[in-house]
Length: 289
Image (cartoon, rainbow, N blue to C red; front, side):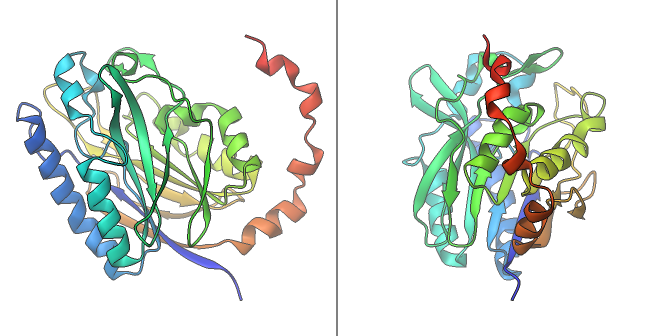
């Protein structure tokens, strides 16, 4: 029988004005997401991922130390603990993208991975940190990741995480494949006019080059007062052939669900032997500093 895993992605707009207290913003966004998480649980979703730093707005549109207060510890912070309880309740693997504090002044853009029994499996820290004008001042907020490209053996599948700007770099996508990922999730915050033309190009290409499924998540709406552009949603799943299997709308808070047949990975890799035919000894120039 095919090995089918039901997976879900949540895209959402910021739930409370950016001028409100940060703790209130966090509470409002978590409450908004919990409605969609409960919907996913009622539909039998087995692996679920939210968007990049889902507990607040995309605050990198400005540079102010106020947003350092949006950080929390992983796994000992309140949101990770809440998601552990939720994962256990629904027997659901949950990828939880958060703004992480390691110590005062050392902050990461991170995703915690929680197994279906509520166990914390580990985390991925965003490796590639952009500083792109206007409105993507991420080097002000995030230290580059230092955990490599881990793959997590969950109850249902081997999963990897790549966060937003990471998707422009094929090297890490390949490492996730070599490390055994069957599904790679890419929680993002990206706006029309900057990268929309790449949204359905790069990630299906990663899926094809590495023979795995990809779940790509983008938030929706415009966030004031910054208004750096429209977060255009269109979260989707694609298969190892690069085919889009399910896609969300452009402008609504939404759960998108797809049944992923993991046996397709073997079929594709037995046809396109990219891992067999790669020549790492010839790629040394890539690693020159």
